[in-house]
Length: 424
Image (cartoon, rainbow, N blue to C red; front, side, top):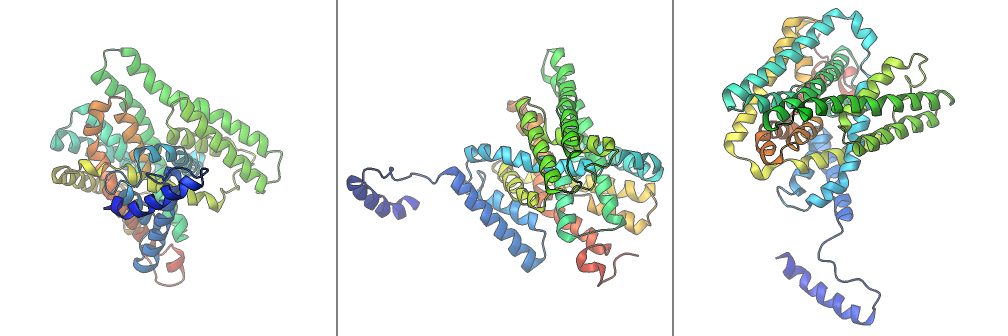
């Protein structure tokens, strides 16, 4: 049908080309970069429309645009275009992971025993619940059940930060949500490294891969992150605090870390998270502690979530896997909420419940982790990790709304801070 519409234009162009030889041949398809750029604009408009008309988080619109125009549905975003956009998506995720890593104040956490106990309970129960569901109910072998648990046990740092920023949220529930997100992300990265070795042990006779690959994931990320922190602090210490030049140094070193991690085949999300955590811990002179990333970096999130939406394998969807993914999410949600409600942590039970709701999002980090693990043995891994991938696909749409609901209900967003009272 599209060819019938374009046929007159093609004929007219070819007639004109006979006289104007400098004209290129009639394009069979639009340049992938131009097409992807148009779809980013569409994603932005969908996100803004959903926000203005329905009150939905804008990130939902970005994901919907990527899903609709991606290879699994309309196919307007090709696999090649996704590959071209991946470095930008990595940069966007990297900057968001850097920010969540900077929120991880280890010295403060050491003094907050109740919060640390609540976080450990939430992390442990989430992993155990997902693992038992994937192994005992779905029937995955222990290696892939552990991989599914590693991918889905943590909240989505990128989504949580974007919802907090979009809502202008501030308060105890907001801070606890961010802190639990950072801690669960850190724990999931440790489990991720271990699971890499477990998967090698299951399918490879080479013991060296089982031992060295997990070490490379962690050590490689540290090897990249630590020098970048030293470089950022060294350069920033010679500049005025909170200046544009310091912001430039922070962003430039973060992007350098992204590029280096990609070159060394080290997970970008782990590298930038470690960079943020190390920066938070080692910046004793407060050189960059009060230097915020520019607001423009949030615009990269449009690219990130369009790419994530387009990467979801909806062509492999079945009702069985959909029900299994829904079951995993229910088990995961129950584990997180129960752990926080029962473990205390200095907040009232109703506010702890809201924190449990706020840490439900599952998104870009989970999708990228799943593809990292599945890529070890592609012929097996893609189908074995379809469960967490479809769980992430569902939570791409539901998770942001749950997080925003928790912050609004707590009365900590800009819209509710001076108006409706939240949970007391």
